[in-house]
Length: 68
Image 1 (cartoon, rainbow, N blue to C red):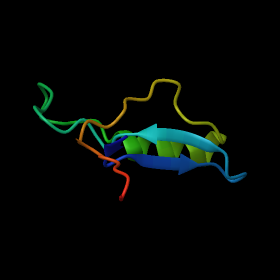
Image 2: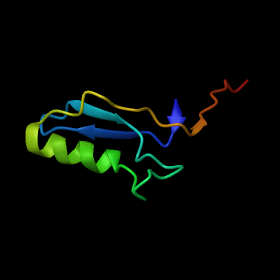
Image 3: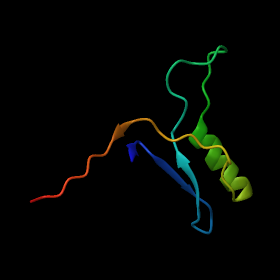
């Protein structure tokens, strides 16, 4: 599991999006970057379905440990 991980649900509370916020990093040649979470939530609001292609976040991993 990596952070930040964003989740988007439809009106029936079905998970439709799990992925990154945007394409942070080097910008595209035209100076813009995709707003992936915004685009996904807009699609979910309009159709009830998330995008087929979803890119996972690339952040810090969560380390789980058992307290002794």
